[in-house]
Structure formats: structure tokens, C-alpha cells
Image: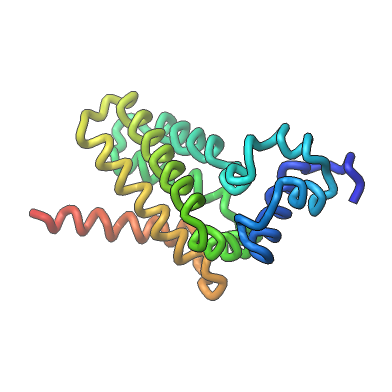
Length: 190
């Protein structure tokens, strides 16, 4: 593959995941990732600060999608209705071609505590983006952060199901169902 070909970032992500799967996260170097992608180490560092971040490339985009959808939700929307709109926006980006990638990602993440820690940070960042957007809509605390936590939990619960190649439902369907279950569970608390 020529170094000048487009999609360097995507190529680096794919190469990293393949190498992490084949030989483990700890045993993989940035040089190996760049070589597998047909790029240089310098190009890698133009896109990512370290090899851990290569698997979290979409975090800022996801946070922005969530916040923008909450901002765009109709004025009379309840906090959970605004969160549902945000979840619809983010799940629309998870097309079926990403399902195989996500299925490959799960065991890599499960096998490495450093990646699990980074995943927890990403989850908190997404919840924070939702909370902030709800606050900007005038939703008070603790309602804003509780609605955000329910939404992000619904997303992650659904993602685990969706990443299973045997599951044929869309991530949007699974996330909507998970949010409905969490809403019912919260109402049952009394």
C-alpha cells in the first residue's frame, strides 16, 4: 500500500486492532502499527499521541454528536427524550460494517487493564458531554447527570449486544430498548 493513499487514520486504527488481536496490546509497537498500515511512525504520531489512543479515535466526534443532538432536540422534550435523540444520532454512525470491527475490539479491551481504564475515561467523557448539554437546556442537577448516566449505560449495554456478530438488530434498536428498560427500572424504584 502506498504511503500517499488516503485514510491514514483509519488504516492505523485497523492495523493496530489487527496487531493487538494477533500478538497482544503490550507486545505491539507503534512502529509495527505504522508498518502494517503502510505508513511511518511520524504519521502515526500526527494522528495519535500513543498506541492506546488509536482505539479511541472517535471519542471527540461521539461527544460532539451527543451534545449537538441534545441541543437540537425540540424545546418541550423531556431530559430522557433529549437523551434518546442523542443516542439516535450516535448509533446512526455505527453501521453494519463496524460490527465486525467492534466484535474484534471487545476481546482486545477485555485482555488489557490499561485499555479498560481508558475505556472508562471515554465513558465518563461521553456522560459528561450529555450532562453538560442537558444543563445548557436548563435541566437541573441531579436530573441532568442521572439522565446522562442512563443514556450512556443504555448505549454501552446495547453496544455489547450489537458487537456480537450473531445479533442482527441495529445498534439504534438495541439502544432504544435498553433505554426503555432502564427508564422502567428507574420508575420501579418507587
